[in-house]
Image (cartoon, rainbow, N blue to C red; front, side):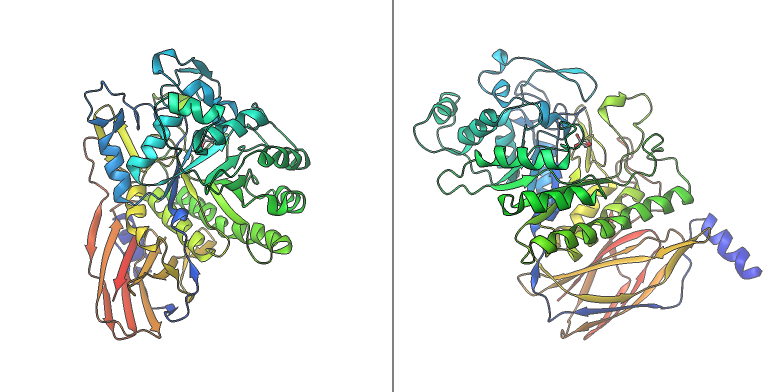
Length: 511
Ligand code: AHR
């Protein structure tokens, strides 16, 4: 009884309770063969709320420091996490967007209503040139999603020509008139978005036919090779994947997957006010990503055993009620340690499936949903999720190391899940990186690991944790949740022991 009271009291005080070492990890350091595509660490930005306007774009005349209208602070923060690609202009917005409205002199661009997101006026001041300038400033690959839902084949085809054709043609000439002589390189091209829903409410069969038609006219100009991405399933709609794999097959280079960790779409819950049962359910939803990716991959394997077609979860993350007092159509939410842990678990899942998952995009970069950055006029803060991406950048283009792992359970109200999530990779210089997540908000975990086939000289680490899982950063207190050095790992040749604090994300570097 005394023991129970102690554990209960410690948990209430937010103290870590040590557990016995039942977490056994083997990292097969000499057996890696799959590259973790850097594009798994991609982002998504839509014309939604203050993602584009206020988030990236402040205009050239703004007092907020900017380069050609794009905020310098946001660009720097995203470069610091090595953002590999950026998906734009939506989302649902993409299937209502007419790209020709967003080129030419800004003052002359037509306005439109953003029907999906708050019914606000979109003045098209951020268009193709501005987006591609943003990507150049970020040093990342652009990922453009074309309008299949309400556009035409001709419109999409001309957009590709406008951006990528080097020579004499009506669209290339128009681009030059608008100030860009040389074409851009754009590899990633989405052929519609959520065409089972906001992108046209289509059946899988109908979309598959439409995809083939649209994709036919998205041409490869010069050496610009498009990776055409079909609008894939909504979460566990396995019939959608099956139909696309059967009817589209190798006419697509990738299929997207959309999944948000939401329990009840009518009552999503507060981003910052939640109890442990809510937390548990969210973690359960995060881990479900593994089942989704596994099952969609199994379907893909049937038609594409050589894994030439990639699975790209190009919208994922948390989706809470908007912050009180903000426009419900703007999807502005806070971001806590819970979000950071969910991101870490999800990224470990994508790494584990790196043979099929070649890109992923968290929704959305700035001021919308599970943002890594929040802005308030000239102020900017980095959310806990940002720090997860900061820690995980070491996995970009590193070799996935196969692991075998058995671990303790995190238990609550008769339910349980693995308490720890792990991923390991070896980078080009031979260093090993291990990312560990202790999902359990109450108990520390002791981990005994063997780095099979590797003799390590030193280990260093960084940790993201906080006193409470609901801790978050505000404009007044922007560093409540921040990275610290981690001293809880000990290495002796190939043997590693780790004391992993509760509710933490840890990166270890071993060389
Ligand atoms: O990310 C917000 C919205 O979620 C996107 O516009 C849409 O694709 C999805 O339903």
